[in-house]
Length: 314
Image (cartoon, rainbow, N blue to C red):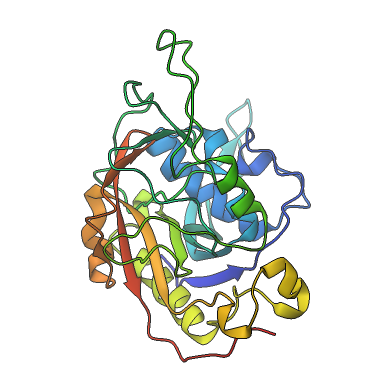
């Protein structure tokens, strides 16, 4: 593996992205860095772990910052012969810059914390007696899977009547929560946990993925260190702007009431890889509980970065 480098993609509209198609069949207008990130996520989450392709892309992708690591990979191209056995192309080597790892940071607001024992499939909260369609297969992957879509966390209402094959899935969150997510303000109140008081704005680390052949080279750690440094250097990046939104839209009466990020980060981590995040400073939030996403057991974890105090974004 050659010397790696990391690039960052700022939030983008991603207009025309089709979640039912793989990254290499998307519109040429989609940023190449995002398609590179999706190539890694598809290899890990879809092909390796069996998550549905259409669930991998979600609305959070548009509002997130994405980091992608590339490495110069040398490949041997075998010689080519014609029908008579004559060599028409000699054996050669080719070096290509290849995406090998990715992660994203999702700004606030977020769906409510998952209920204890909740199960999500395709970003939808299942009734308690329903059976998830995907099996757990996360023992050897450096992957965490925060919300597969903005519908993937919280309490919902659904119809529990009928057979398992015809029963409608519960909504992952209520209409009030939908409004909370779609509107700039207010950000609403969540249930308190060990490390979150239910009101403090936090960002979410997610979609951490590394290609299998490049694991063991601290790829995920390098990605996290770069993202962490950027967050510490840009603590107000995701804060709402009074000038852009106005006090009326933000429903605040004074500058002190404007939500600000103060360094709190959440990750919904696969239970099998919590030790990775513990090495990064994250701690398991026991009050958040244990839940399943795409059949894979997850737990919530939090970490607070040290950042400089800032004034509200005007």
